Length: 232
Length: 354
Picture 1: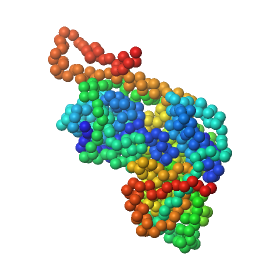
Picture 2: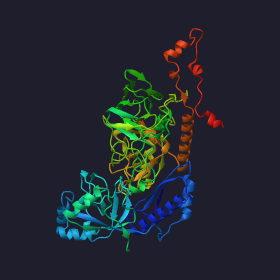
Picture 3: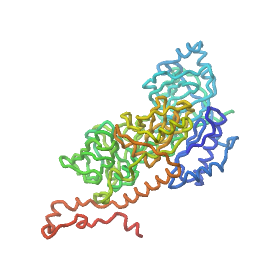
Picture 4: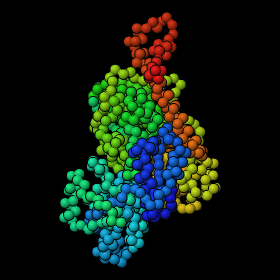
């Protein structure tokens, strides 16, 4: 079942979706809502997977209507992450071309990219894969006509108006300007997923030496960054 | 207490009931393409419905065990041998240490299941042993199996009998029906013009060779979207039919991604998804639209039928009709009905009666 609040990318709609998802999760945890198997907030809609042996769709739909929308949003408070980013290099292979396309120096490009407050609109596509919105218009860049076959885990890129942090290695048609040693998904870690929908992210420029040091800690299973409560 | 893989086909993976409750973290459910066939394979060897089994498409492989185990193959007709001895699918058999089990290509269907008593006990990842190839989690190192892999097994009862399903039931079509594949319209059916929506149920679709555990591409009918083929990404489930710019419908399966940016014209009713996924390349079929409530009713009916079938498994007569047993019988005095000789008693009948 899908509950839709909009058809476009809008931070307000996204906040209402996340707040509703959070209220439903609370109801499931409290045993007030049985048979709901998955609650998936996305940019502008909420997907529920349910077991008809425990709850019928019609009853679930009535309950959702009764719960109503909560424009203020009473979900978990947003968290603020600072994600270290090694710009350019082998994985950030498109940085120079991106700067050229936009008539910027690479330093100017990095300053814009790392000076932006991104919002995690949803986690989807692959485990822990964060879709980032709030990208300044100058960074909007069409996807490659032909996807590349193997983009590394941790690659930081731009696809259309969205940004991302690659959570697992795989094919991608996005353009990449950096890499982070932070693992947004590590099934062996006590907390396998770092980010959740509604979080805020800023990138912090780091050098090669710090990147290697953080990578070594990351490989050892350490979670190398911790969130703070969002200022906004 | 393990199964050794001597050889493996290209698409042989460990699957259990799959991951639930993690789609909001981008984690696909994985699990079996045909859950009914998997449940039957498990029941035939005395396992819980959700125990981990091997799923395969194309040639399966050959195996050895370091203790006596029961095994069963379901989902399709496959050539099965213990050493040189031919074995039937759809019932359980015993594999002794030193013997080699060889399982061939699924015939008449695509996805088949090989269960071992005790269940495969590779380490669970995110609450499940299911292999998700794309993100490399579950099963053995998150990949398809290969020769020399060792699969640890859980405990089982070494004296439990081998089983088969009750007479009159077909292990290949348990819980499925003939006729059109039922779908529920939406969530983006509004992206398509009425005449294109009419094609969805009026024309023949075909199964193409572009298929794997993530999705299958359908041919035969083009479904252009009047409002375009890009949406702001939203949630998907196994059974969602996405229509990308090619107009060729894409049916998402167990290993699909959790979100997608193509309009979804409809969702296949859960009771019919495996029936479609099991159709061989080139098969023709039609869709029929049902309401959400009807789709749920069909699912509930399928669940009830499956439970009945699993609760009425019977000991396999062959265990009793081996040569020593036959020699001990008075075979001259009359003709015995095998059913009468073994007097099958449905498992769990006593529990059900009390």
